[in-house]
Every structure is written in C-alpha cells, then in structure tokens.
Image (cartoon, rainbow, N blue to C red; front, side, top):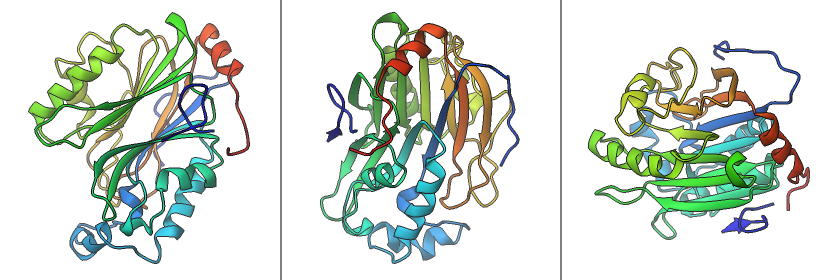
Length: 284
C-alpha cells in the first residue's frame, strides 16, 4: 500500500570521506532491523528465535529507539521489517517507524506473506515526495526477495533509488544483480541501498555491476554481527556523478546488523528538482 504521493507513495565509525560543501546534502540510512529483535550474541539466535513467531513485550520499546535514530535522516531503507502480524503485535513496522520518525512518505514491500504469522517486508521512508515507486520481485529459486525502486524528479536528471535485500547464494545473487542492472544502467544518478549479504570488494567485482563505476566508502565498513562487526554486508552505493561526503557505520547494536549511513551531495539540477518536491513535516 502506498501512502501519499502523486502516483504512489505515503505522505560509530569515523566517516571515511568528508568533503565540505555549501549545498545541502541528502542524508541516507540503510538498516536491517530484524523485525525489532535485539540479537546481541550468537546464542540469541537460538534463545530468542521464538520472537520470529511470537510477540515480545519489549519490541515496541525497540521500535521507539529505532525511530529516534531515523529522525536524523532524509531517506531510510529498511530490511527485515514486519508488515503487521502476530509476531509484531499486528503492528505494521514500516508505518509505525514512518509515524514515529516523522516521515510523511513511506512504502512497504511485502515479500513473504505468511498471513497472521509473519509479513516479511522491505520498507522506504522519505521526507521528499517521490514521483514514482515500483515494486520488483527479485529472481530466485526460493521466492521472497524484493527490490523497491523510488524515483525523484523527471527526465534524465531524475534520482533513482533502489532498496534491496539480496539472497545468500552466489548464483542467485548474480541473477538478482543482473536484474537490478537492467533497472539502473541507463540512469546517471543512482543509489543502491540495503542488505547485500556481500563484502564490498566482492559486490563491486560481480560481473553484473562491472562498468557501472558505483562508489562507496573507500574502506570496508563492517556491519555484522552488530555486537562485534567483522563482515561488511550492508551498503549504500552511488553513481560517480553524485558527491560522497561521508560514510559510516553507526555504533548501534539493537539488531543483529548495524545501520550504515551516508551523506551525499547532488548535482545542481538534481538538487533543484528535489527541493521543488514537497518536504512536509507532518505525517499524512
């Protein structure tokens, strides 16, 4: 369900790169929230596994903490959110975080629908009104992985944002990345955000992404596991025409992944298009 747009949407590590600019930046965050389960050690995957099926009394407190973090950002990509089932207390977590984080526009992508038991989803929260939102099911032997395409502006200067959660297997990932490439390769201003289940160097060397010249932080930013990060699995990648001002992983271990944040600068024409869209402070 989309909430309100003209067509479709609803109303610490030290930074590795920091370039001062007089132009306002766009603050991005990608976060796998693991449906609000506080996993802070490997044994919690066993002892707290029941929370993937049943509600927990502290889950609402966890969501409130996440919402306070999200308020600092302009556009947020969420993975492993619940769309409103038994385990979440029938709370649509994307909608809740949009309201609590004061985002006027949000979108929930339902990828695996287990009825009242679980509503596996991705989500997008935005302070800017998008001009287009598309829901894409990613290929794979086991269905349930998806990507959200969000467009800001019109024509060749539009900003294209893809929110995704890739599969674990290398072959399936290659198929999914080839699908993503078809969506983005003709666009000069692109941002990929999400849990990509891949170190950055492996991701950028995949045949599907070669030649796109996508850039990110100039060093690995581990996000997993949150209590002692060793693997860089969550990324924000941008096309070279966008200005990378800062990139960091937040010291925030409320999920089993840490959130990754980035601030970017936009070309003047694109900045003008974005500023011309509504940027409301009220949640519709």
